[in-house]
Image 1 (tube, rainbow, N blue to C red):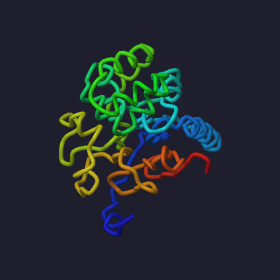
Image 2: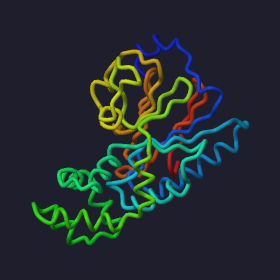
Image 3: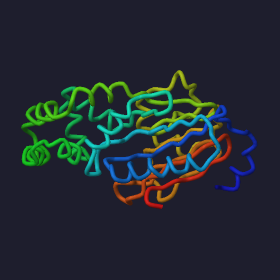
Image 4: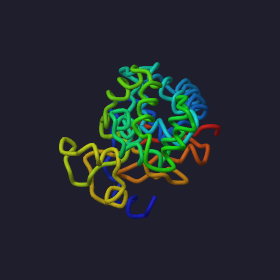
Length: 253
């Protein structure tokens, strides 16, 4: 933590009497996700009883090999009073593709969509043909639509872009500094890096986010970043929160 953050860390943060576990970007890493959920269960069992919430910060698909399994698991768990899945920019792009956007498809193939298409059993030759150059986009979109169950599409369309609990704001990418929550737009909540990451502006909440990878978690007074690049490093990260207290849980550690 930079020295200036220590000097300006006077405001206590509240989780409203709850314990919260936030989980960073999964990106198709099914084995790491199931292992981390078991680790959280063990961690929770070793602590005093307290109302507990799990918040998934988005980006369940792309890059890793098992996007379909990740989505089917999270959809089966379902939205509940204590388990919350947020939308990431990769889910938004997948939805845009399913909605028929050939522009989104080309963009998606450049940052992990290929692995998602293959995880749903779309023909590899067709995926590679579209990746190689223009043509056959509509055919690929139709094949993908036919492969993804409507229950998954409905679940993904219903994912909110943020969740607030006490003084904490959980969101995929971050917020636009100095903008009230009700005036934030999804493009920022799902995609922003700067000026959010380097801003020293005081928010009315402590933002817990993924999206921007780092080798270790980023902990500052005003934000906590927990995307440790699971698809690349093999390490999926969760952070436990009780008011100002925090602790880190990582897959396989």
